[in-house]
Image (cartoon, rainbow, N blue to C red; front, top):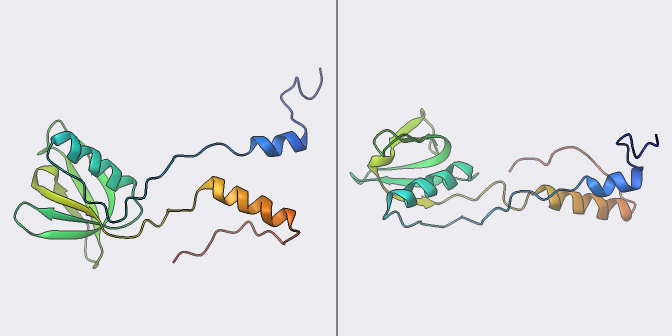
Length: 142
């Protein structure tokens, strides 16, 4: 049995297999979704959970909370569902029922935008081909 039959790949071929497509990320910064329907609210809050920037939630009573959505709990109805936020201005975690939400805006810069695996791999190979020293350490956070 050859190495190929045993599941081993030659090094050159293995390098090409390292790149797989990742999740396409939308640019949501500045987006204010329409929340007319229950499904639109739920979909927008799922996107807010995946977003790596701040969101601004306006409650039906007019109060607001801005911060990072770190959790959401989807129940049978809006009253049983909530989103949990780490407020931008500090303080403790805030929980907001879906039923209380009047508006949602993606206000902060998405910290994951442009930092895809595909981009990193392309830059890695470009630097390597140019003979540059390659560092495998993570980038500094802003």
